[in-house]
Length: 538
Ligand code: HEM
Image (cartoon, rainbow, N blue to C red; front, side, top):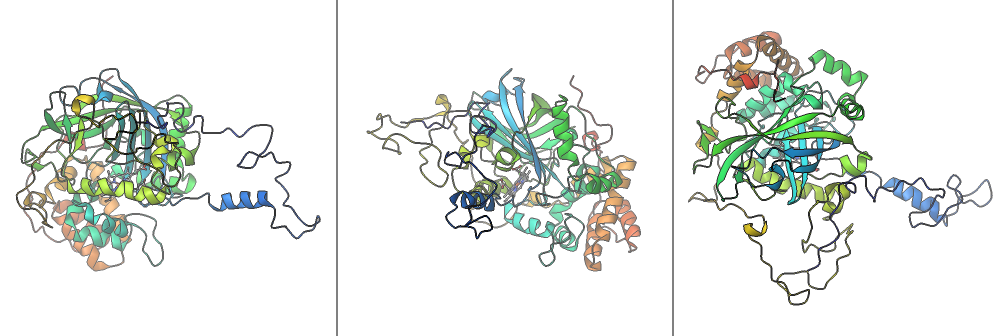
């Protein structure tokens, strides 16, 4: 066996030995030949014409012509920073992962993002924010690819292209840039009532954060943890910001989009430069791993549902400190490749159908975005654990693999048989039963309630937060041209809360419909109201 040379040290990741300073006394070609001039092309006489034989001119222009790679199909606009994660050891009873052990320090790279806008769009738009963290653990990379909103628009990943097509600018004119201020978005969400919970969050102050440093983060899906005894639990991951949760007022967000479109990126960079390192606690809500995977009536496989913290408190398991800015935006923030399938022993996936589509989608999109199958060799993506993957060749191959037998077992490269079980630190999937009937294109009945939790969210907000939600619906739906779409969305709101519906209808100058579903009383959840929210563990 011949472990390749891809293990990177902390210093090498992103800004290390491959980050050539390019400050030497001599300018060279990319193949290292010293140049005497880079300001004048080679010409036949001072007045030309330019000669085709100028290989330096051709190399310089050709490389420039290919500087851009495709931006991400979603989450194109982002800001990345380095940090460290320190485990508290409190996750031990439910999770055996090494990075969660008490005092274990793990390098981390985090990328915050908006979802819909292109790479050059404004930071302070109304949108969901991505919160993606790559932990370079001793057992391999673990990526927690989450958002600042704990639920998602759809219950099945097969609909992801559809919701994104609806949220992106119209195909004919490529406007508007805003996610929710147009007909296709409201057409989609009013026809797919499973989106209602996410839409409520999107119309709340959560969708206009004051700073990346002041956002919560959520893994959204339910994951399955395994402890050293092999016992399993179901969990939801939460990031709780030490600075508390704060938002911009809508008017501030709009002004900033014009005055400083880089507001969030600048805020993060400046804070770290000034030594004001933002911190988050990672926490878990833990549920018993029962066969039905339902907790207090909530289907844990439904990504449009939360579990109120009153029913399952968030238990802190470690702290993240972001403390180092990137050296090169392209090398690190643009080339980082997150993937929900980057798991380590102790953390497994559940059968959430949204998560399963994601398990395919990230690696697939990165194959084209990052130009081939070797993007895990890019410094920012390299694991800090030994790599021995039997993957060979391909575009942009950096490893010089030794040996002749890239297969296991073999008798030629040391002859070692392939053996790896949980006792050898290997990743072993938890065996889980599947339903008797397979091959079905349908959702379970437990996915059918689309209104109770949006109602819970709205009822949990303070009066001023509710006013902001009403104003947001009125503003965004007011941009919609088609009356029939506005009316359909008002019907959705009537099924959430009749007062909310009446206020938005009045703002739009339309009649308010009555609800078509029962509107049960809900007990507000303190954790869902944003104002005055803190995470006091210091
Ligand atoms: C990118 C979160 C659902 C496909 C991202 C990123 C985040 C994220 C944070 C940005 C990663 C980065 O900074 O590089 C989520 C969350 C989801 C969700 C929390 C639902 C709970 C989905 C689904 C799909 C999908 C269902 C597809 C079926 C993608 C793709 C990218 C992306 C293709 C671009 C990745 C790249 O080019 O590197 N997502 N996503 N996402 N997501 Fe998702």
